[in-house]
Amino acid sequence: MNFWGIINLKLLLDVLFAIGFGLLLFSRVKEQRTLWLLRGYLFLVSSAWFIQRYAYLPLTSKLIDAVVLACSLSLAILWQGELRRLMELLGTGRLAVLLGNPPKEFRATKTTITQLVDTAGKLSQNRRGALIVVDLGSDLRPEDFLYSGTTIDAQLSTDLLINLFATDTPLHDGAVLVKGNKIISAGVILPLSRQGISRYGTRHLAALGITERFDRCICIVVSEETGTLSLANQGKLERPITSSRLQELLENLIGNQNSMGTNKSSLSKNVLSQSTNPSDNIISDINEKESNKSEIFTNKRD
Image (tube, rainbow, N blue to C red; front, side, top):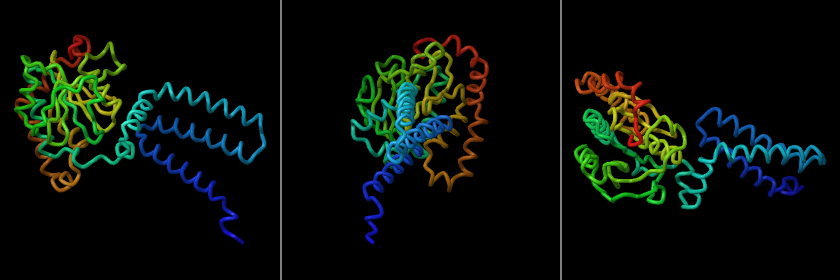
């Protein structure tokens, strides 16, 4: 008996492609509640396919199709940001971003983390507003921004970042884009988030907006009004934080895993030394005293 006569090759390929697509979706979902919704939706779709193919139940099939259609519309509204990002990535051909394979040149190193923390700490002490976008593999391009800014293409350094955010320069109010150990551009205008409009200022809304659309980028925010440090990641904002806490977060998010494994003890010593730094204590005192005020008095410039 012919083996391929028993197994329908077309059906087998159909099932394998569907399973592969489902596994890809599950691997890209991080939030537990979203994962539950996706599982339920795929279960309904699988049930509708099975009934239509193997069971002659026209009424049941119609009811399940109606439920699948209603769920599809609901998920399209609920996940409109994610679906928009998916279509943008498909339209620009960035399949590596979709498959979760960020290019190595976008990964930051320990030196990058140190320079970002030092810059944020000094800007916070001087209450100088700043917005730093760190690309970890989203392959951000000019079309991803409202305005792509001015090309810098220079080696990352603390002094250069501080100068870019000087209050008397035209690039002060925009964001700086960092990839690896390079400053790509400055004066970048980011898309704003629709969440927390009455609670956050423009800088924080911009940080939320870009991290909502691209999950492999983070954004460091320094409030011009209070000097408060914040970090946006995947559409969520952690604030207020000290420079020591910022270093811990950056090490977890963008630290080089190879060097992190071999230098774990030295990194922990750096964190302790940062927490005992007098300048960091000043920032911590400011954050503790003004964290409640910042929620009320942060204006649209922040």
